[in-house]
Image (cartoon, rainbow over all chains, first blue to last red; front, side):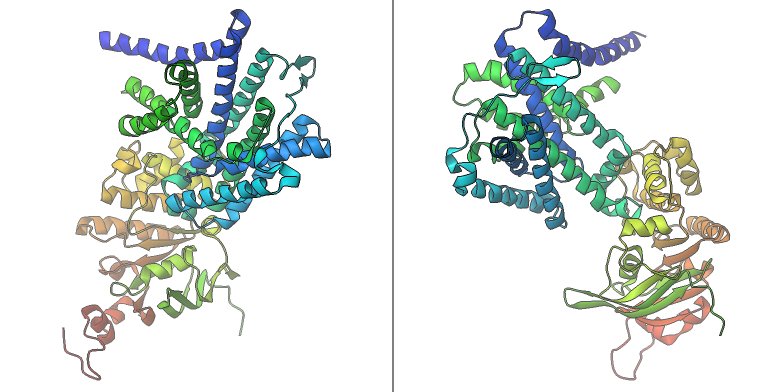
Amino acid sequence: MRAKSASVIAQTCRSILPVVAAALLFFGPLLFPVAEVYLLVFGMACFYAALAMAWNILALSGLYSLGHGAFFGLGAYSAIIFQQQLAFPVYAAVLAGGLVGALYGLLWGVVLKNLRGAYFALATLAALEIPRVVADNWESLTSGSMGIVGISRLPALELGLISLPVGESMRGQYYFLLGWMVLTAVVHRQALKSRWGWALQAIRDNEVAAEVLGVNVYGCRLLALGVSALLTGIAGGLYGHLMGLIEPAMVFSLQMAAYPLVLSFFGGRFQVLGPMVGALVLYPLDQLVLQPWLPQGHAAVYGLVIIFTIFFFPRGITAWLQQRHTS
Amino acid sequence: MVTAAPHLLELQDISVIWKGQTLLQQIKAVASSQEIIGIIGPNGAGKTTLMSVISGQIPPARGRVLYQGQDITAWPPHRRCRAGIARTFQIPRPFVDMTAWENVATAICFGQPQKAAAVGRSQAIPFLEMVGLVHKADTLGRDLTLSEQRRLEVARALATDPKLLLLDEVAAGLSPKMVRQVVTLVERLRQQGLTLLIIDHFLNLTLEVADRLLVLDRGEMIMAGPPQEIIRHPEVVGAYLGTRRVTKGRRTPG
């Protein structure tokens, strides 16, 4: 009887915890006087959560990419070039940058069609180098390895009656990134819980069985790759405006796949909320605790985190917490 | 001559070459509606390769596969499945992180020609019943025994609502009693209108149910005909016992 009531309490905690966390994310900055640094850090945590979910959408089809920096960089450079040289409105340029990333993703889908596992991962790493070398050397378009500086802040976002001052205030930026994360989360949920998500699970469980049972393996995977690249490309464009500068080594970087990989594995890559939890826990922990304490070596901690995760909760903390409470 | 209705399946001069090796050579065969055909032959004869050509995993180097009179040689596997061709694998390929009923539901959801998005547990249960797996409906694919995974293969293939069912060694390693159950199931499926192609190395199933046997040896079809005739034929006996092609014109009895 006691065990039962204990499990009821655990159950309640489990269902209340996400609600409390979500409420804090949404209303915290409105209710409490929050220091700018928290808005910055949690805003960027949302940004990386979205990046992790975008990466994970492809991973859910059973392919692990190390080259998402290609989409990120293409998105960033295209967005800035479209805006500065073709006079696109900022948000339209960012979206167009995402489409450029998606096109490159679809190209992967065709060229790397028959690669799996480590071979796919290595090929993506090579596919990341190609646009980086181009961006490094096409100086008339990209300013070469010096990068593009003085990128404008994100303009206010007009949503009907509401105007969100994204680039003007840290609070505006925070809510913008929170919204971006929620939008990505909706897509990420589809990759797990829809009919498409079901097909993706069948594909990663057993590709050959999936195809003889009527799953369009190539189509489902191509869609995952396209969506994943699109969201990563958009994130790249946003990043340029958030940072105010981009350079090839910064955006065409292994980091843009490795970091989402760590966040997804740590949070739980088969859970709707997994990559998001991973980012919202790890990034603030890193920025607010580890970096002040260990300014030189804090990045190494991510290496430890991924090793620790693989050893002790290979399906991520979200899955591990759920299992503990259900069993 | 009156143009007859097309055969359900017709293989026209199928050849498969893999890394310079000829795995199948000019296989010709037809299967009519509600026929049960056994494919037999020694190990490495190309039985499973032939099945993979029909289900679409292996593209033939030459030849055509016709299904209901249509050339499907270039169709991807999922399209053939939706058109009514289902297969099982000799080495089971369950979806390991799905329960048995979810495995079956996947087949219903994607394999049947038109299907609503949501497929529930109750729709999957009848297929598990057919193979005696209802009690394992909620067990994960990875936790089923090998023999249960084999039966799940059959349930999943049936759940795609096939017209042509390809069974790869379903009866291998089964006790005589379980073989009887498979015989009953196969007969029932035929009555429901299915055509079956059964790979049966040890002949414990097809000898009883097949209308015809196709004998493969080293990629060639060496014989076709009714089971009782086939198994008495010296060339088949030789192929199975490995005394063929030893010395010209001499055959030592097994």
